[in-house]
Length: 480
Image 1 (spheres, rainbow, N blue to C red):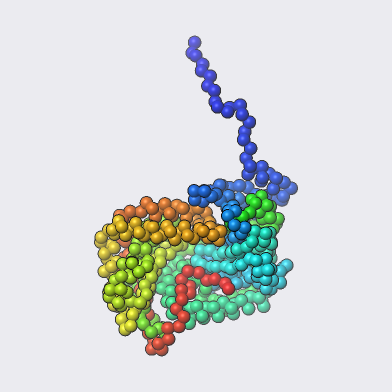
Image 2 (image 1 turned 180 degrees about the vertical axis):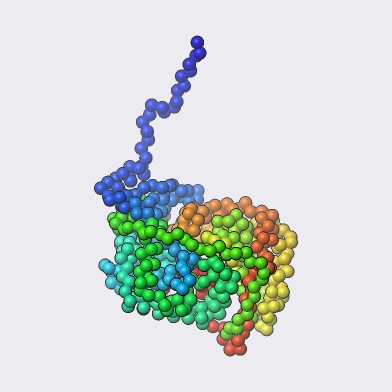
């Protein structure tokens, strides 16, 4: 007879341990209509000690909460999955226009009252629009959370869009474009660089929009855009700070639970075809010196190559000890300013490089001095010590950005919107740490390709007026 063995499983007769989140949600969802019912999606580690709890309302609204009781403050951000990439030809700039419109009148809040009520509560608010996203952020005392949620939900669902409001904000944006692009050297050159570099993809038009499109928007255009994209199922609500999780979620249900989802259109962004020949353009501007803007191709933010290329840029362009600064500014003394930036976008974009000549030196001289430095990066591995310093600087910058609740909220919202992972920043840190000199050599050879770059030469037009050459549209358009 075969012997039967009985195994004792530890805890087999113990009662199941209660799930605190399940119990909390059962209580919160009691007597709530389907659109207002919450479900817990995931608990996501945010660094070694913190956790992001991700929930969904029945209407599709994502709610991401990180409890941080280190100070009695809260940051509330609403990230919408809409930016200039979601526009179409002839309607460019409408995502940015909406950033302005959203600070206007709603059905329950008079024009100007939104900002005033938050300021009286001790809060500060602003917004930004870029290629892949639009977000609204408010820093507030913890006791102002309920008020802020009410106001944010109100403008998500009940914004007033009539001819006077739309016409007024169109003029504001048109003036902003004149100041930041048409009358600004750097803004105009950045716009031209992307226009020349992209022939198909929506990244080729500016976030602020073309002037003729801004002037041509109708109220019907705005209503259609609002009803399509400003909906709970296209938004991520990020709450970081000193909050009680159950009370915060209950307030979200109260204020957002009645909102209906929209039918989001299928995104129809054309991939950019490979660039097989260098593109060059020359433009005269009111600048005292020559300038050069260069756009090499760059990988998408989620691509394996993105982190090594950021490290390579750190070695080439970041700070006075960088290779390009030492060569062009300190040794050859032909440049007064250099900078480089790897685009952090959902799709492949540009590695932007900007050089400003010193004195009478020309753009051709700048390129002639830069190209051998880039060729060296393609030919010879960087030194281990260089790479270690670049890693340390980037890691310090990343961690410093997480010192405030606003910094944490911004990273959570950005990475959730672009990559679908609110803690992807820590994956980025890991990618920086494990990058090798071989990785940097590979990305240098893959992306620093002369035949796939776009070059804009800026020559003085004779007026000698430098104007205000800030970074205008280089990173985002912000409402004031």
